[in-house]
Image 1 (cartoon, one colour):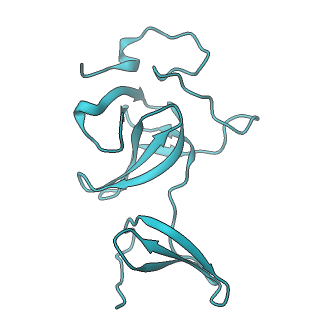
Image 2 (cartoon, rainbow, N blue to C red):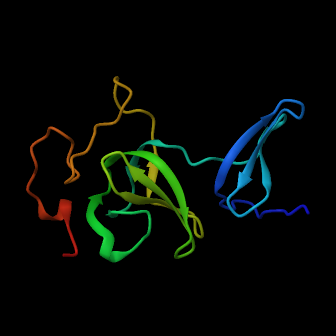
Image 3 (spheres, rainbow, N blue to C red):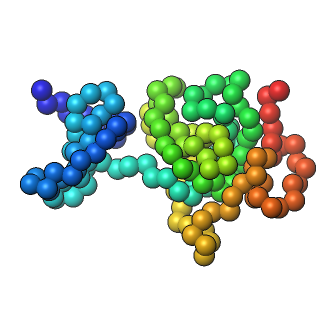
Length: 157
């Protein structure tokens, strides 16, 4: 049975295969079935890439796990903070969110898929070494002196 997904639908892919005879990449969906990601005429689906992002909202809550739960919030990052996202996942909550796992630990929301609000924006590699500045657990650049600002590492106790 063929199903048509609405434009900008979010999908979770569990595996991919290149079909040489059809010149396309097919992906198995976590919800069942297969979808063409790339075909001979161009791209079909847009992946959410890992790598460096900069936060774009007044604060981004960092949670211990992928779920968005107030009790798992460990800190808040201000707008303009550079983070390194090493994994992305779709979470079906409050309209659906794409979440990013940080190299420094924890998860943040990258995009609200229902209203397309972007909480963090993908950027090019920010330095010559090809990697973003790593963050310490308090959200400051690793190796930098902590500012001591309580707002930089707010917690809900």
